Image (tube, rainbow, N blue to C red; front, top):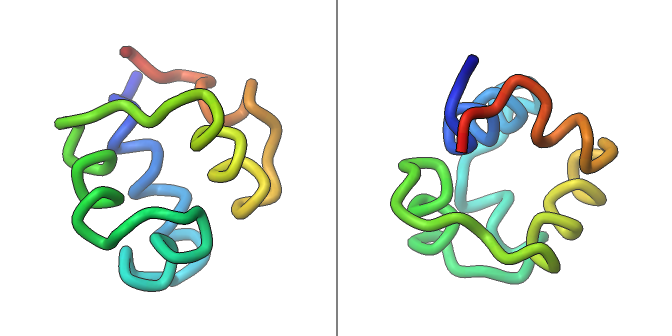
Length: 68
């Protein structure tokens, strides 16, 4: 099991991206995206949808094996 932030880091690492590359693609600042990866803030459902579209995954994949 992993946290939501750990899952985001894993997805990003698989694409070999840095947070500054992902943030504008999902419509948030670099700082906001980092709060997601550091488990300080959980993104809204709308933002989760944007994250899924960006990474080309289904919502169920985003939350698989995640402890909230």
